[in-house]
Image (cartoon, rainbow over all chains, first blue to last red):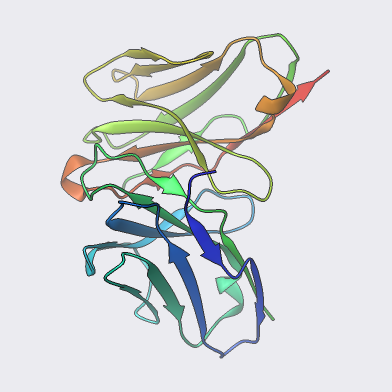
Length: 114
Length: 113
């Protein structure tokens, strides 16, 4: 176990709805990254938060947004859900934002959009 | 554009044999190359990484080889065990891009008893 927790484990939403996913980082980690993993594919980088500020973003539309709180936990919000948003959403925490720091992944939240 | 890909989608290996998983990358500017293992229902688990200025690194039962000339990365697992059955991903990081990982599509390893 990595010490990174995510909630909920599974979620079913309807197209057009909004969803909030949560991540608690490993103790002492100030950086959280979010990834989307479609079935049978590798994770795709959504964005990263470092000390409560967005620190890099992948090729995802603005309806994907996030927050990081003073305790370094994080939320991923997705508005106007589309069917293609169905995926496993992973968060990963690391000690800091530099490339030399290992990322520790949580178990993910499985989102199904119908 | 950047891409990290894998040659074989599925690898079947006899228990006790060695496994070799291959990965091709296109971004020669990457600073780190990492191998992750993902078991069903779990997030990716770090196995081993290698800096771009190295060509070989060994861990416990695993060895990563980096050939920058042909932009090829491989993971060797010695004496493969049933617990090694999983999907393996290679990923890369560029120092200037911080801690953003770019993943390939994965190789499923099936260990036969």
